[in-house]
Each structure stands twice: as C-alpha cells, then as structure tokens.
Length: 437
Image 1: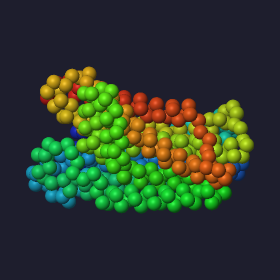
Image 2 (image 1 turned 135 degrees about the vertical axis):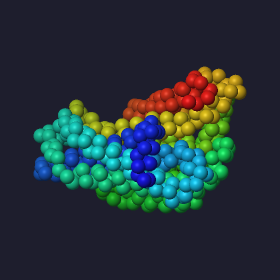
Image 3 (image 1 turned 90 degrees about the vertical axis):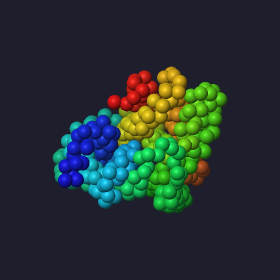
C-alpha cells in the first residue's frame, strides 16, 4: 500500500522529483561509465601508466555523486516539511511518514538507476574517445559491457538514495503536526548537534590528511590532497550555515548599500534561512574545491617535475574531471532553482504589499550572487589549503601552480547557472497571478 501511494505521489509530482531524479541518473551514469573505462584500461598492459589517474577520476566522480544525491534528497524533503506536518495532523504516524519517504526514494532510485545504466555505455565510449584525442591513450581504451561496473553503479545509486532518504525521513517526522500552521521563516536551530559533530569530525579528518600530505612522496601526495579536499568539503557543508549567516550578513550589507530595497531583502533571507542558502552554496563550493584541486594539482606536479604540456595533452586533466564538474554545475542550477521555488509564497506576499517584479528579480539576483560568493570563497579556501600542502610535498615550499582564467571561468559558470536557476524558478511567482494554482 505504501509503495503504491509513493508511486502515485511521484507520478503526480513529477516536477518536484525532477531534480532528485536527474541527480541519481547522472550519478549512476558517472559511476558506471567511469567503471567501464577503468575496467577497459585494466585489460591493456600499455595503459598501466594512467590507471592511477583514471582511478582517481573515478573516485572523484563517486564522491561527487554521493555528495550531490544526498544534498538533493535532503533539500527535497526540506521543501516538503509542511506536507509531512499536514499528513501527521490528519492521523499519519511517524513510522508511516518514514516509510512513505523511503518508498518515494526507492521509486525514484530504481527508475533513475535504470536510465543511468543505459547512459553509462555512451558516456564511457565518449570518455574513451576523448582519451584517445588528448593522447592519454593513443591506442584507445576498449569499452566492453561487463556486469561489474553496472552492479557498483546500481549499488551506489540505490544505497546513497535510500540512506539520504532515511536521514531526511528522521528530520521529517521531527516536524510536529502544528508546524504546518507556523508562518515564521526563521530557523529555530542553526546547527543541530549531530550535524555539528559530523562536520567537526570531517574537518578534523581533513586536517589530518593535510598534515600528512607534505610527508608523502609527490606521487602519493596528490591523492592524499584530493582526499583532504573531499573531507573538508563534507565538513564545510555540514558547518556551512554558520559561515553563510556571517558572510551573508557582511556581503548582504554591501548589497543593501548598493541596492537598498532588493539588497535588504536578499540579506534578510540569508540571515533567517542560512541552512537553505547553504544547500545552494554547497554545490558551488564542491565545484570550485574539487575542480581547482584536481586541475591545479596536475599543474603543480608538472611544474615541479619540469614538464610542459602542449597540444591536445593540455586538455587531459580537464577532460578527466570535466564530467564531474559538469555534474556539479548542473546541481548548482537545480539546487538554486529548488531553494528559490520554495520561496514562491514569500515572493507573492511581497508583491501584495507593493514590491515590484523588477525589485524582486534584483533581490533574487543579489541572493544568488551572495550564495555563489560564499560557496566560491569556501571552495577556494579548501583548494588552496590542499594545493599548498601538495606544493610543499613536491618542492619543499608552500606554493602551487594555478590558472586564473580557468578559475574565473569556473566561478562565472557557477554564477550564471545559479542566476538562471533562481530567475527561472521564481518567474511565475514574480510575474504570474498572486494566488497559486
């Protein structure tokens, strides 16, 4: 009965589940496709020299998939918190709510994993073609359809989705039946203690890895630096609402000075809902941190070894991390759209008291830009810490190579994606009827 209700809910609310569905599809495609490439390269002895890089790229894809899927599921449940409270108010028990959330997640995971497995094969073929073009594998990488990578991808897709849904379900049943009647936008607890403990543990683990990086050989230091970046991203995401509130207050004050009405609206939203804002800032942070660490780690090790890449080989590192970065950029758009769509009621209320659509559009832009800036600053700090330790391992000096155009392009893509998602999600609320359909 619960599974049937979940299936009907997913069918009736396709748009509400679209972002979570897309996140799982792309996650399974990345993990499955990367696994096929690694399996194909492992079958060729002449490709042993790049196996480490391919495995590292696959690990990055897997981490990004877990991070994004968990974030999207949590954000989806957060958006429906009033729905769960309403169901509780009409007699549904906490256990029934938990099972309903888990059943909905299972429906989405099964459908999305099937689609992701189908797309994994053309993705692997495309990756192999790029590797041949860039000279990483001049003879090509054979892509054979074997069950192993698909099993791993399915396990990752289903397990991560269900675990994220379980964690989100615990939050959902904590919402009392009367919560549906509360109109206050302010969050009562900025940082629940389990989240604070998990974030502190992740930051501590990342700090230990940073300490170990300079003591390793340059060959082993790069994976350790990337691991430190991943751990620090998890910690920063968990503890991020504190940073969002502080940085949002400072940057929001600047926005309010430049554009008093719209800037003040953006600042108030960030201060009252820092956890919601961090849900949109996390993908930006992940994009900047992982892309900069991977790309500039290759540049740093090449510079330390006196290697100069020319021709197609220049694109080898961007190609290996490009898919994961594209995935995180899509998640930036989805997360921003979901967080802004949740504010449709607030936007309509502001219109009833005389706020013009143009002012609301500017407020959405300011809020999106501030959130992007927060995510960029956090991601830049994480990447800089890991790369500095990597440079110390490679040269003995706290130094690393970087490309300002690549960095600026990455930040620009994140900002444009966020603005597109935010403006598109709020367009109807800003210009449509005052009463929702």
